[in-house]
Image 1 (cartoon, helix red, strand yellow):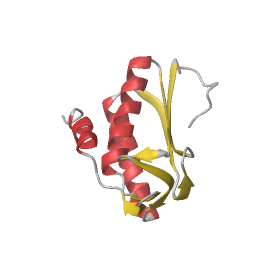
Image 2 (cartoon, one colour):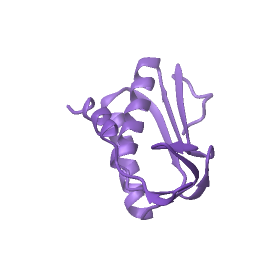
Image 3 (cartoon, rainbow, N blue to C red):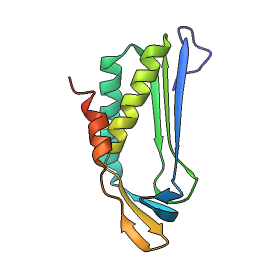
Image 4 (cartoon, one colour):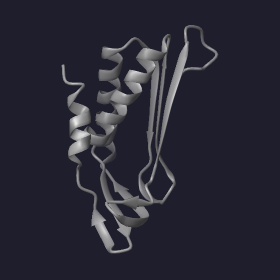
Length: 133
């Protein structure tokens, strides 16, 4: 992300996601995220590139944590800078919808009922569909 003191930035939109402490009715104590670094890097670059091709953005930044995180830990940060808020808000929401459905992370929750892999949600796919050209 370029310096915020640079000219032209009129809007900076951020999203910080946290590990849920409850999911699908169960208490969650931790979440372990696995990934293949090169595959993940390429997917994140593709998502950022697509956002930059759709909106007039100055810069973007995606930070997604991996490994074992505990409930309420921060898991993802998305920053989008643009001249205008509309582009920044739309691009940030687009990036998050694509991260949820297209980024290669495998998630395992430790719950009060034991460990379980987190399944893809239909609602995430529906959110992504609205961005289809």
